[in-house]
Picture: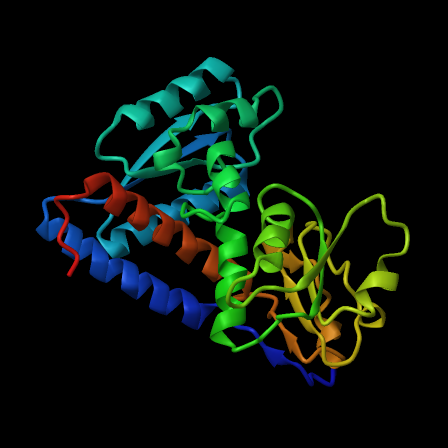
Length: 294
């Protein structure tokens, strides 16, 4: 049995209060005649993606948000994907939408992403919104990085001036998170190092880190011997073995870490909550100045 000395960074209580905040504002928007709407576009029939999309629509129902969906088969075309994006861009009842990623081979996700109206970019991944992030201007923040910020704030983990190592440089997590954590702002202002596949000795960097965030989708990549005692360790990347969710951080890291995300219920719930916060904020902006949210 493991000697679990670390405290768990559960994301569920954070997701609960964020979604309750969203639910309240959805009702306020309805009083102004605005029925918030989220759209999803799914290409193919990947089982994990189907499950994620289904969960999003179930959450829409629980929050009182309209939900819209367009499915494109594996043998569909890139033009069908672009047409789906255009349809949601033009639908006034859809205030935010996303393309479930990854898409099958033969589809160009980035070209479809570029076609999304930035004012309806629920994932915060459109180049325009990523540019606003670089400039520290208001806009939708990519959901998983936003969720990690919420976790650090909720548990009062001050990382100012601390050394943070992010493993992975992807556009959905590693890259935007490195920008957010290095900014001169609350719950940030850290020294950030981004590791990637070109780094041969990952442990050289992680062993000196106060905070480790893994975002590569390799099961149990971060092991106890890579972590200094008392470090904060979050798994942003996941993979699947059948129906079993496998985080990047091995559960045995709890023997040495001070804080750690659990295998289930860590960053995942906060990622979903941030999607709905983004959608609600986009709806607010699109209905101004007629909205009354006081």
